[in-house]
Image (tube, rainbow, N blue to C red; front, side, top):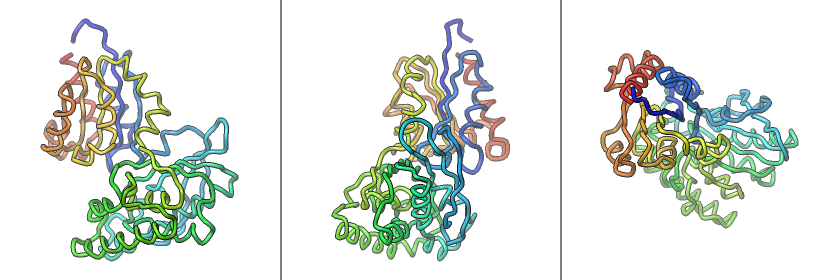
Length: 338
């Protein structure tokens, strides 16, 4: 190892269905010189977003994507104003049904998000930030929009923190991942176009031109049509954690997420962290798996970035079954070469 002082920052997202962001960060830090590692659990607005924030947690009764009532957490933020943090993935997320049928995927509703916002207002909150990613729905936010419209609109100020920058029809790109059949994409596109027309007619907002409206199956588009503000989830978390200042003094940076693909280049944690680094820093992106063309695009933007995926490093079995140990192993090897 080099005799030069090393100051490392580990700023990583979760590995979906495998490990939470805090656990990923801890595993990477185990492979690094602990006395100089600054660990930051990150989120881009998807799963894990709410857990980045400190505060009292209260439970709200909401409908899940198929109408089942369950309890979803809300974090009450300390400080001035009555503010809280919600997460779409904890309200109408994919975890409610491991493998929905195509019909179920198409029928999944966002109405539970309206339940959560109404319940937040009943707690006397004035503002909510809601992480918009990881939803099971592709309904264009209609369930949420309809339920809120029946109550007169947004019950409080809302900021939608999204994990992608896609515009409203961009929700189609992620529908098959949620179980929607390929033959249903055409009708779904028609439905989304009709919804965009409805939103424009009712509220004067063109969600087709609204960046980030297509995240979480279109929920931010619906909320944006009602007056919500749409922001980058990564940007919100980076501000809360003081990430830019922490990265500015680092010699080495490790970031990562479960899979590096083209979506990683659209406001996700990996691209957000890399954008805050400099050519004189050594930057490692660690992931479970990676698409070759996405890695090429990332390195074209940031030539000083190195990408390592666990599947290539330790094999698919260990990458999936022993993820945290594999992360520590890859991290240890990386820092041993400094």
